[in-house]
Length: 98
Image (spheres, rainbow, N blue to C red):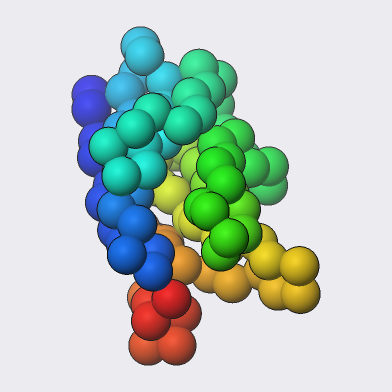
């Protein structure tokens, strides 16, 4: 099963592609920046990350269920940990405006 998650962070197009056999891949502006082939994810550890120029570091926390995967992403700056995407819960307008 293949699942794709797409969102933007301050003009950067983020795409996460997850499949059972190939694992998860993180693309930033079309470039493959990180990948992970773990079979299970608890959502407690960032399994994918990429530096977004001078914005900070994007960390992705996959959470695998019995037959599905959800993703939460945070932008880590020197002062903050800002939620920028969640496939399982709504984020406030402030979080989406990054």
